[in-house]
Length: 606
Image 1 (cartoon, helix red, strand yellow):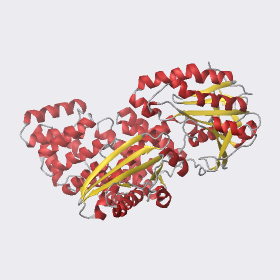
Image 2: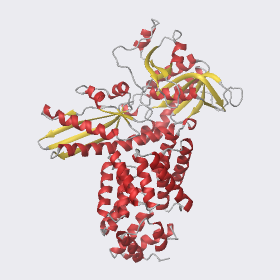
Image 3: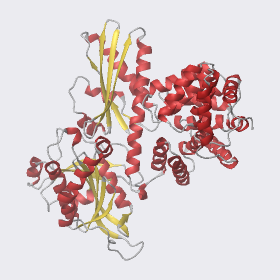
Image 4: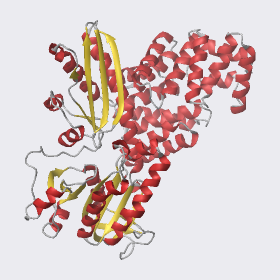
């Protein structure tokens, strides 16, 4: 078994050692856990016991850190690190057995050599960070090494390396020249001559950038008329433009993506050639005035499908249709990519976290929608602001977390916290004028906590101009309109948010907005429907419960109204008409219907 649980050798706290570091990470861990958590963990444990840990031990390695799907291993010998990586990567397919392609366990590995700081059983320093970054640049089932590693084993091991150039790695001051270790027998035979060949027929491989990256490939024209290519190409161009408006997403330019037009492609090869993590492909079929558009989001590391969508429409206005479908595709792709970014941040070693990772971790906790998770999100966001005081999205999300805590009755918002939230929202607007997420969160805080509707409306409008596919921006527009008694405008905005992102982790709030706007417009039946939909997503959402109580009362279903009110008062005993007014952003004519319904249900005046 690999050694673990003992301090790594060193000369005391802060001492440095020159060692080889191997960082390994399992490909598609969260997806496999989602499909079969117990089975995946059992297979991973079996691989550790039968292959990985023995390979580490027999090559002189010591396990410094294990994070579920990742391993950090220290070796006194570079040769030992490379031999260990080679053995594991070559033999994992055999030990894992004959699995379907989307069930296979595979790893990426990165190896570097340099100074590290041992601390207990763990390791710190730039050399560790570089190994982790090289792992991310490795193909699935492969090994990516620094030039220092390649130079030390060249001539001593019969291996072939393929250059991937000088990589600019996040938080690393200088570019790192990197090589991918070729594991196939043909490459090893070629290496026996002493040369280190680089594949002449393959384009130079590019590592994905640090942030999520995607290429939109030309859509296939499945129509009988080849003249319809222009429509398919226009569709791709619109989708590329829509995705390019997402500030945290790296999108390959149209001209590069269109070099694959008319070619049968392997998306894994496309990912390596363009240096992207994800590929969007699709097709267009037109028959008369009917058109069907399909799209599939694919993980370029393993070729597995992440999301697929189909859009049927009548071809009345081509430009309008292309624009609508482009925004819907972009709106559905964004949450999937962001979910994967959150998973990546959660897997990273805590010592390597920067402000972006802390924000992503906070966003993941916020999506969980429990009181402890939202409180933890606030703590992570404050930590992110300590690292980067000008991080607009982190500053803005603190206010939204507190809005949620109050909406569920999980925690009161003190006067100091309210003032801080408003101040952070203004800071976010100053530093995030071109960040749609920062503008969305800030606009909600200024509307709900500050009653500053004019600036809130302007910021929400700017968010959807910057990124028309931003569902949260449309949600913000809906709430701000609702608080100004513009209920038809609000309903249109919430419907648009739901259409853009029907599987959004925050869709419960889109539905609660529909419930409130319906109640305030006097459509009590619709209010009940949407409040019920909200509670199916957010079972503790007190605002949805209050809407149920008020709507039932207006419909003279007084027994149901009182039952809802009793449930609310068990959770929030201090609620009265007076305290409700204090927490309500505005009291326009529509919200008077809300108040009247609560009073009719029996809520005391206070």
